[in-house]
Image (cartoon, rainbow, N blue to C red; front, side):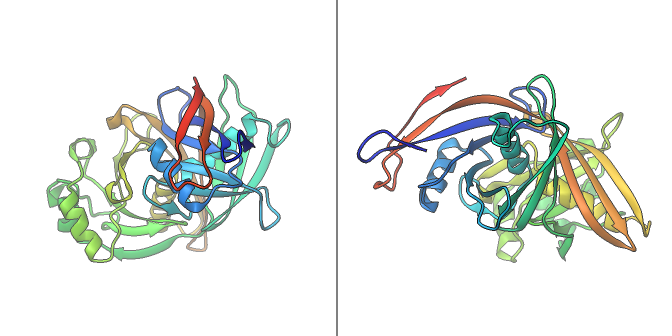
Length: 321
């Protein structure tokens, strides 16, 4: 943050693409590495201005860890999300906020859902792979009738695969409805039916829906995520939802003690292909830990100029690719 006049302040920002090594792939993220001086309302307005799935605001730590991070969609603040953590760690590391990275380094972000440790080694070609540990264990909510989910996804009930688990609310810091489909054809045909999602919301189940099908080749799972009531019609890469999926699949597996891993592709149908690397550790029937990893690439940087006395940011500018 810097002052530019009696009533104006400037805030540096960076944007990056997360869960990809290819610029303009993956999931977009805007990061303000020093958000001191911004009110909650101004953070929400800036997130709406970027209109990405999420924008992050970095603040000094309050509990003795590395940084405090606040995460906003275009319409609300989130207690935890996956790609914003991966991307924020990448932006801060790329700008040498943590000093030179030689070998492995772990930083910890303080967030609404708890502490989020993120580990990364140095990468190459402008990319840096990060892995986060989900802040909470697996929490299971209610199951959802296949007919309700099928309507919300503009599919037939027969498109829902029920052998492993029914449509199930699950989370490791933020809840999603996890739905397995019969195949990638059903996955490609799915699209939001907002009135049905609003009906689902009225039952008390927030329709942030991760739908997935079994993959092929070097991809274990293909996934999509819809959250139109959060201002996200479709998300190209959703680390928190993929963490929830990995934890749920581990929970459903008959193995009592095991380690699992998956390569999960998301965003393909949007033209923003992403690759998420999920793994879990299960012991004595309990999923003890869930991790998600991926690459990032920087896209652009710039400055947001605003009047702190105003509820509306009056101008943005000085962006550069």
